[in-house]
Picture 1 (cartoon, one colour):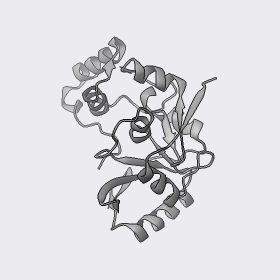
Picture 2 (cartoon, helix red, strand yellow; picture 1 turned 45 degrees about the horizontal axis):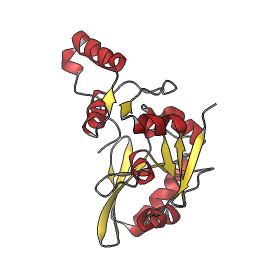
Picture 3 (spheres, rainbow, N blue to C red; picture 1 turned 90 degrees about the horizontal axis):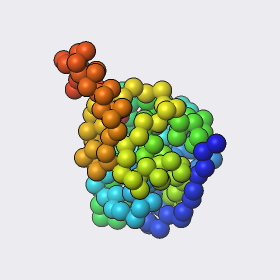
Length: 193
């Protein structure tokens, strides 16, 4: 069984966003992925997206209503609703991910493609998977074996640019896919709009 570690959130903007959106580590919604990872390591998250994941269509609709009240209209893709949220004299890009719903934080963590994504917060506490912490500390980009997602070339490049090293198995998989169909190599993407 995977172990999780916690630490308190000290960033007042994330505290406000978590409270405003009604984030809850038990039931969702969750701010998850890169922003909580950066918070865990006391790195600046400014300029990064704040990805919010929900457990149901009802949760998505509730968040959309809240975001419409506190920000402008959303930019919509098939995978996310993106809002520009003004707070503390800065604009923050908040993405409500609608690609999939997750009943629990454990289910969300099992969905992520890379272990280094398995960080989440409700604005009060950050929860991190032990494997995520270890892989971040070694700057290794490791495939999450429980993920149902396919390997995204775009996301491998993105995380490599963040300073994570890919392993030979992942590199071999990307090269093989390119050799099988070079025209499709650059068409995969995540929920970024």
